[in-house]
Amino acid sequence: MLLDSKPKIVKTLLEKGILVDGELLDCLMDEETELFLEFVNLPTATNVFHVTKAAWLNFKQQKKNFSSTSQSSSMSKNPVSGERCEITTTSASGQVVSMQRAGHTREDGDGTDQKEELIKKQLNYKVKILTDYKDLPKKRTVQDFVSYFNKRYSAIKNMLMQRSDLTNLLSVNKILNKRDKDSVSLIGIVVEKRITRAKNIVLVVEDPTGQISVVVNKTKPELFTLAKNLTGDEVIGVSGFNDKTVIFCNKLILPEFAQQEFKKSPGDEHAIFLSDIHVGSNYFLDDKFDKFLKWISGEMGSEEQKKLVGKIKYLFIAGDLVDGVGIYPNQEAELNIKDIYGQYNHFTNLISRIPKHIAIIVCPGNHDAVRLAEPQPVLANEFIKPLLELPNVFFVSNPSLINICQDENFPGFDVLLYHGYGFDYYISNVDEIRNNGGYDRADLVMKYLLRRRHLAPTHASTLYIPDNLDDPLVIKKVPDFFVTGHVHKTCVSNHKHITLICGSCWQSTTSFQEKVGHNPEPARVPLVNLGTREVKILRF
Ligand code: D5M
Ligand code: FE
Ligand code: ZN
Image 1: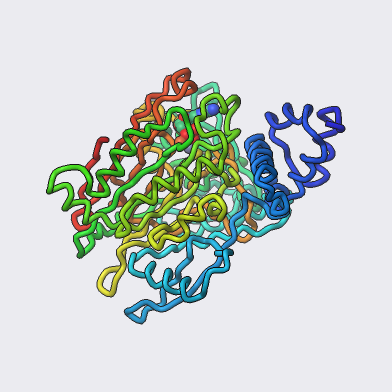
Image 2 (image 1 turned 90 degrees about the vertical axis):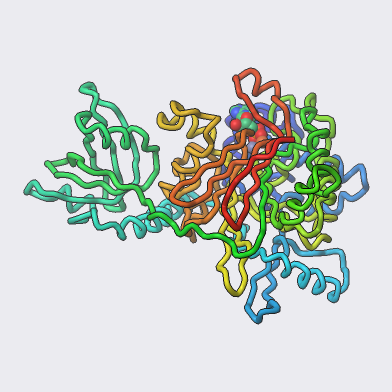
């Protein structure tokens, strides 16, 4: 690289508003300057405030593919950004249905009639994509991070304000200026958590007017446990007595919600849940996936099972569709399909075998060819083009909220679909998760996030795009199903009538997972009877 020292690279990139990943910085020393400058000038690359080594390696791989197929002119368009179009149309019932054709613009010049035909066919699937994440192509600044946290704060504050137990609610500056000791409440973001020498917990909590210390005494075990399991940046309510510059806490309140209605579909419909397919990896279990495809196509299994397959109307895939390229160091040695297009082609061939009466709803994960920062937009057209021709495949962003099963007599189920890249952080850092099963209990992570009404409450758990209009990771609407993946072990549970489902995987234990003692459990498929909400786990 012409910029031959790390400080020079960092300075040059910072001037462009780009924060470069440490791993990427190491590998940049040997890279060609011009190619890298082309990379950072792409709309999405400059948009990704934090640039990772994976994104750079992906770019190089794609560049190589494009030049080998003489399509280098199309590189002026960013290969990893999705284009979206929204079509509003009217269903047979006269109801206005918002259809996102998988968030994609079809650019192959096919006829309008054909497109309309496809949209009409899609209406039969009773799938409504409620989240409409639009990636605004703009450079993010420090102010965007401030606005982002303000948006999160006010969204969760509004939820906490519904609570009757936050009496005498005051801002931090008013509490700090109070002369008398009194019973007070506040709503703030957790900035710091520490244990004192006397083994009490001190939380530093901030609102837009200032910061205050909150003392949680070890003599109140329930309260102490709740405080111990808090994570940085989450928004909480605090009640207690103020004394000069501190509050002695007697209650901590999370933005929790009441028990939900346990809805049951009037029709005899089923849904199944997959995640982490990892096509292209040496560890991809193609024989087991083939068995699954044969089963779902009715080519295998008892008569009863074949009848059941006919009732499956929805199939969710919670990310990591392919293993990707350049996702971790020396990944190439563990890939049997070494280019990203080849991986998606194979994924497409597999998914095309699923019968067309099943709506397939797919979001990306951290191994997919889209930016790592959340929300991850839908996959770009070129990776999945043949699937876009199919009426039953819906590509969505990560996270997404999708309504299924709705008709004139039933409001449908809202499904929150999220890959779960941040789960490793909560499993390692939150006592109540780590000490109660850790990786075997993805449901504990899901419950933890739902109780906080946020998919990545702490800044440290995932990469994200600071959106100053909204925080797309706030769980605004309480779903009926919360569906995730990433930890490669299936888990099904229930929290306040929300069905929590983590998909398994289709990849055997990788060398990395073996080293760190991970124990994935591949080829399991949760199956839900939407009429009874009963869950079965199928093994392949
Ligand atoms: O992640 C699958 C699981 O393995 C997930 O729990 C994270 C863990 N994993 C995999 N690779 C790594 C590295 N390099 N560091 C930490 N944890 C890791 P997946 O997203 O499929 O790779
Ligand atoms: Fe995975
Ligand atoms: Zn993953």
